[in-house]
Length: 205
Ligand code: GRF
View 1 (tube, rainbow, N blue to C red):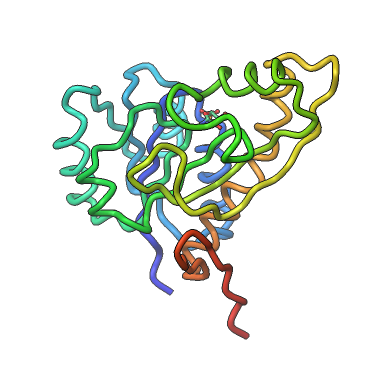
View 2: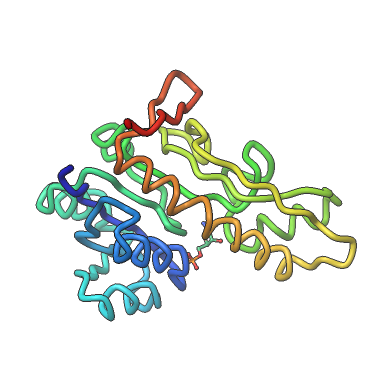
């Protein structure tokens, strides 16, 4: 089966990017990361890409829409992976890549998500609310914020002594499990979107 051309968009340290790089290298993911793009020039995730011989591109926010679309089209990208990318994608890009953009969010959507909920802010809100369970969600991106059809979720316990940092670390471990798995299934053509639902198709024997 032809390898799926993937673009990974990042803003931070890139630990989720690393799990996807590793899963591609091991052959688990039937894909090829053609480019890693960041809206932060000094994002360590760009360094991770360079260390693995992957094209690393910085696109500043104000030039984002047109330059990003150009980069995706030039590379023939078939799957856009948002791995901690903090710029809201331009509507034109979301429409052009409908059903082919996957995002990771560090809570159990629809809790603690949407405008203003990103990074540590998500975990701070969960700890302050006093929830007993939080977790990670991988979903397709639509024109809303964190509102597209959900692919996978993994719950994690929240303990009384948790801080935003300790919860973030526990949720990140869950992210590192469900994110590459969602990318793997997409690249195997096994994710089917049916309205708000995502079905995982059985492996062809
Ligand atoms: C993760 O917590 C993810 O949920 C959020 O941004 C963070 C990215 O971390 N969207 P990393 O850059 O992949 O380490």
